[in-house]
Length: 374
Image (cartoon, rainbow, N blue to C red; front, side, top):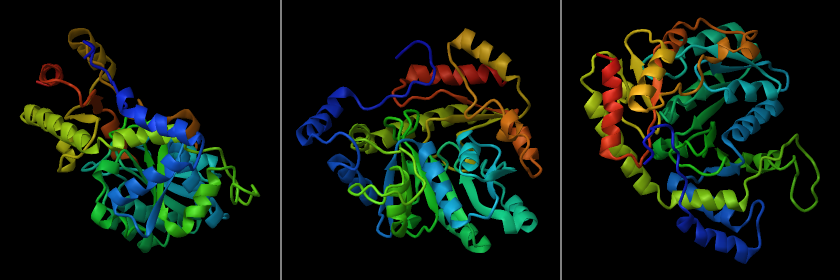
């Protein structure tokens, strides 16, 4: 392991990929919707227990989000807004804006960093006629209950987009197929199930042809290539499938390693009264982002320089140096009171984590945090 502890994602090793690459050569099918794509689709649908819902693979997590927003645009062409938490990633408001909507930024609940339920109620009271959808964002792989998302959909008679991002390993598989919501996942190399820059949509089967069309220039099919929808080139190649398949084959070891090492860190940091961290959400979940939340406001630049120079560790802000409503390009859009978001943003950061870290490297992470918060 490098003596400098920064974010160091690792994809499947070449030795694991070779057999899948040989299949690609044998099939002479390199682009999209090929044999590996369909094999992987069946494997992940089986793993997730999907029968009523189905999967469409995409070129990235963002392309999944944008495709879902375009679905909402087709369904609600006259509505104006999509609700979204300000404490999120740039992909969320960008997908909303690029599909022709405007975001309304909502606050988060400090118990789980997810969009605050009371503010969802308040936003619907104020803007009900113009709200096209609610975009709920999973913070760093934290699993949001499917029943809760379905309740929002039913309560407000609205479309719910769940940006699950890195939550695939944490899904409540028992209830997932009951879902009538639209789900976007990411397989970015920094995620717990990493691949090439690629993503996935989970949606009811009746929408399968639409999403296949949107990610393929809006074609109705690949034979006549008649354009029936607005679309993009968001396709997922056989090489994307090979990389994801190789890591999916190793999913049990990935989960085992993450759980073992996160539990070690949690135990070591549990007695530090100045911080909250991974079990902020009341349970340990599979994540490669170890959250540290200070009791007090921190000077992130000062903390970064101290920990980097002394311990050779590159701590970082998980999404951005500031919440979305504070970015210049997003400032003009509507927002609800954001007290929790503004407070958390000044106190939260991440420590780098890798499932291949050894005990001595995990201990170095612990020493670096305890040296500052004491």
